Structure formats: structure tokens, C-alpha cells
Image 1: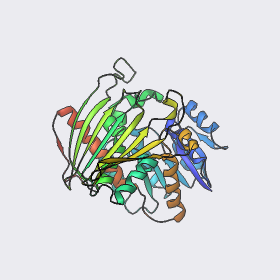
Image 2: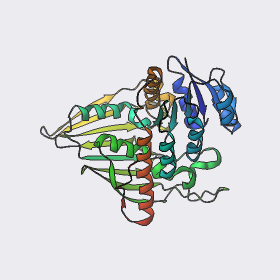
Image 3: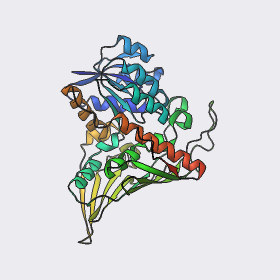
Image 4: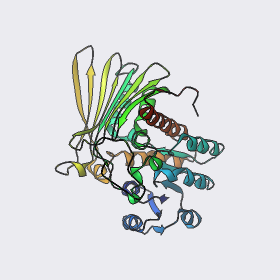
Amino acid sequence: MIRYGLIGAGMMGQEHIRNIALLDGAKVTAVADPDEGMRSLSLAATDNAEGYADPDELIRKADCDVYLVAAPNDTHADLLQRLMATEKPILVEKPLATTTADCRDLLNMAKGRRAPIWVAMEYRYMPPIQRLLQAIEQGATGDPRMVSIREHRFPFLPKVDDWNRFNARTGGTLVEKCCHFWDLMRLILRSDPVRVYASAGVDVNHRDERYAGGIPDIVDNAYVVVDFANGTRGMLDLCMFAEGSHWQEFVAVTGPKARCDALIPGPARFAPDGAPREAEFVTSIRALKREVREVIHTPPELLIAGDHHGSTFYQHERFLDLVRRGSGTPEVTLADGYWSVLVGEAAEESARSGQAIDLRGRAP
């Protein structure tokens, strides 16, 4: 039995609890969160886990085999620094931190550490994305030249203390929300980014909201273009006020042979009928001038267990396999986490300045 110590019992922490409960040989045995309401909700979903208001108390007292960090973004760097001393495996939610400076510090601190640190890039493990990666590996597109990602979705949901309304606490929308997409682009194109250009705005969401911390400053729509070292390029089309979209994410990869598309519906709880919906995978074959479509099935219990189309469950399967083997490299490393924050941070800077941001020489 692999015992998880969960730090951060909010919405994502509770999704992790539901998915871990579906796994054989794993359970959440300790939960830490300063908010009593979130802590109580999370403890109610576990099998007699211990609850702590202070994560340091969990680290000192709880019997855990691995740690899972799902606390607000701006707490990640400090929590990871404390957890590294335990020499136990860590799964940390994205983004790795809110700034590249903090990410670099974590990379330096982790040198020589034996236990793995895995950055939770759930989108890699969505069944339609796994099907897309498989097709690319098998040569369906030829060498990928372009990645186009569209996410049209609902606004950011309310969180405790409204932490997700402010760039200072999230890193900005293009870090907080979009680090998944920079990670996918880099994974698919097998190259590191060298230049980022973004146009973004705060046009619809949160404009009339006021909090003790001030006026929300997170962008709610953007276009971002990313150039890569091998001459390939990626583009993101983000809209955070498109609740009616059937396909929440659309990932298209194009090469000389074909275009392959992963079409991902939004969470079941936001569908008009509340029912889970299947994803699709489409191959547009250039020589034949026709499409081949297939439905990508995800078990209903996984669609219900979270908002990420089963990916949280599959990610935990891979993480636990690494933990049980006792050796090996995480599939999503601290360096991967750094690159995803670097592109998001550059996109935020580009959107403010109107200038393209050069990333050459900024590898970890």
C-alpha cells in the first residue's frame, strides 16, 4: 500500500483523492490544508485519513510514502524546498512554481536527490492525447511541423481566498492555465522553444469583481505563437469565456503526410445534460484527401472522478509504477516543469510589452 500525504485540499486536491481511491494499492492517509472547510470535505472523501491545518505538521507526524502537492501555485516552491529534505517521492501539481527564478532554485536544490519529483502535467495522459502521441510516434503525420491548440472553456472557478484571480499568486493565466500546452508543444515537436509572441487581454471575465487583494488582473483570452529551435512552431488560441463549446480542447498536429487532431470535450458537470462525453481522434490524410475518425473511449468512472478526462488517474498509475520500481526518471521532470513556466512567463511579458521574447540561452 502506497500512502499519500496530500498538501492542498481544494478542488484539485479532491480530484486527486477521488482518482487515487480508484487505484489498487494506494490511498490518501494524510491531508493538510489551512482552510477547515476544504480540509473537512477532503477528509470525508478518504478512508480515515488524518487531517492537519499546517503542512509542516503533516511532514513531521504523518506516516506517508509519497507526497502530493496541490496547494495554490505561489506556495509550491516553499513546500517543495521543505519536502525535498524527506527523500520521499513527490508529485507536484502544475505549474512547478510561479516564476522561472523559483524553478531554477528548485532544479539546483534537487541535484543529487535520489527520490523522484514528478511535475503533474495531466494533459499528457488524456486518452485522446495519448492516441495523438501514438500516431505521431508511428509516423502518421511525418515529422511534425506545426502544433495548433485551441482551448475555449468556462472562466476560472472560485477558489479559497480568490487566489486564482491574481497574477502574483498564479504566475498569470498563461502560466497557470497554459503550462500544459507549452509542455505538449515541446513534447510533440521534440525541441525547445526559442521565441514567444503573445497578444492577450482582460475583456470579459472578472472585470466587476473586487477582492481584499484588489482588482483581478488575469487575462481571459490570448493568441500565442511559439517558435522552436528545430524550425517548428506552435500556436495557442485561448478563450476563457466560451462555456458553450462542445470541444473544450482541440489539439492539431500537422506534418507533410497528415494532420492529426485530438478533440476533447469539457467536464461532464458543465455539459447541458451533465453526462460524460467521449473524445474523438481525427486523421486527415493528405494523399487520400479524406478524414478517418475514431471515438476515444474513457471509462465513465474516470470521467466522473475529475475534470481532466481521465488523465489524473492514468498519471497516478505511471507515478506509482515509478515509485514501486524504486528507481528511474519521472516522465515529467523538473526541467519539463521549468520550460512550461518559462514559456508562460515569456508570453505574459510579451502580451504586456507587445514585443517578441527571445528565450535563447535560458535553458535550465
